[in-house]
Length: 153
Image (cartoon, rainbow, N blue to C red; front, top):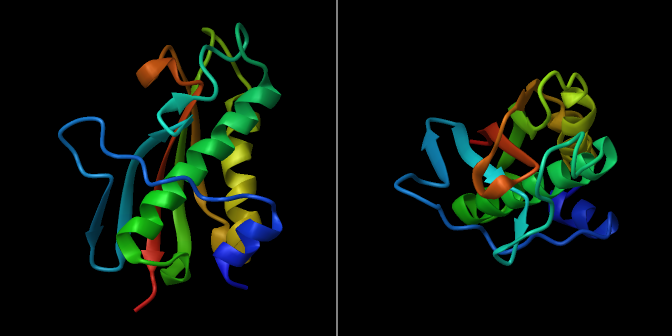
């Protein structure tokens, strides 16, 4: 199934591709691999979720934040490749959760990103992953994700 059709079936729409917030590129291609810079949970320049899970945010709201991060990553992928149909498979997802010290449920939060990738790409969306709690993220974002994927020939 076409990933963009699947997004529409899920009631989701890709935002405009977020611009780089510094001296880096949103995506870098080498061979058939596409490395996506970290994306946070901002839509139209406005943060959707800020603060730490365990304080201002819950595991569930963090899960939703991670979904928005993935939508931003997908927008950058589409901008770089012209179509999400160019994705062969998602290889790796690195997820970061702005959380209180000792927070142990980062995997449950980053499941928001993983679940959406699988919903959009099916088996090709299953990936290796890291889910890490950190003391802070850019713009006080609740989550941030980085994606590495393989492109079709």
